[in-house]
Image (spheres, rainbow, N blue to C red):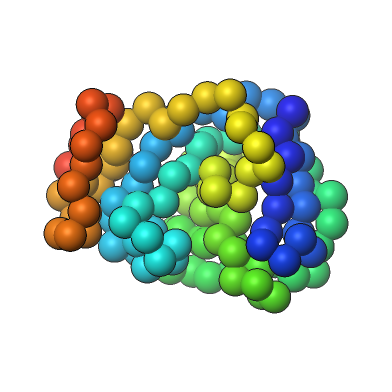
Length: 131
């Protein structure tokens, strides 16, 4: 079981299922959303994600056609993304996890639009875009 939440602690969640497809996303929207060179997300079936508190603080931003970004309205923490292309799935921001979940990122996506000031130094597979 993985637990996590936002910076202010109002929103808390737990995940009782497998988290897969863990990746670093370098697209411009993720960079701006996280204020960093990339965002790290893992895929979880929505039925395995349970909100423990703070749902009233959750805000949704439609960042592009068919893509929602969910964040805390109180502290601004980015929590997850949802895509119309993957119904029933959430892409959870690993930076919101409590402690070490026991797995590591598997690859980089959207490296074709990565921040020009950042150099990828690991040996993970890299994809210019994403499907």
